[in-house]
Image 1 (cartoon, helix red, strand yellow):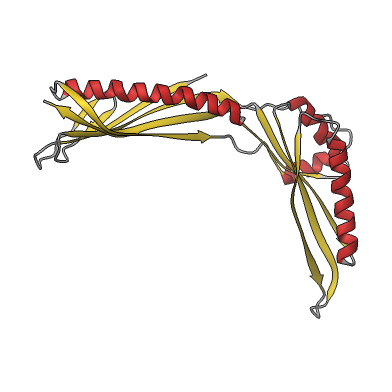
Image 2 (cartoon, one colour; image 1 turned 180 degrees about the vertical axis):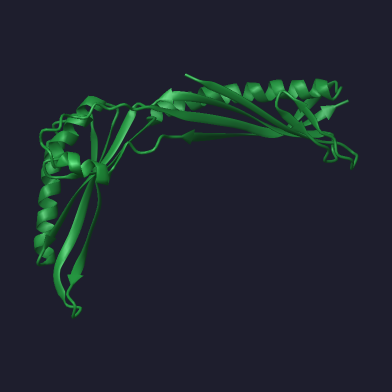
Length: 238
């Protein structure tokens, strides 16, 4: 697990001349009211504990009713299979159909696609379910992230860390500018996340889906970076 702390600051005084101070990563310059505006940021890498995937069925038919029957039957069967994996949340996704035309602009048939979405913190069950569904569905994407519960818990911790870092930087800047103390004018806390790219795209998964001998995928979830910034303004007491 990796943590990072960044600090930035801007100072305001009653003069129009430009002053610059560099201390512990802080930048300060005058704005007119003996105030410092600065930011602190804390980051932490955390292992992804949630997998998300989308799978779809694409079909063609001579009429819209036959197409809908094919798509609905496939998706309904997939949902029945998914019920054997209660630790995986499965929901129906987008479904769209569109006509095919000949050179005379007459409808010659219909093409459609229906999608289901998977989400779980149980990697083993999700891998097995994907393998089962690939007999009739094609993988569209597969990616990893941090579950809401785990993310919320870490963000609460980082908010406290960012707040403490803001206070410490305020004390450092107060001493640097020979002030006797400071008062907080305003502080804002903001969260951010940096997730890895999807593990697979639809093109790379189609070849695997076509080969029934391919074993279940052993997932390597990787890490994400969660960050919280505290930015605000203090007023120097002299």
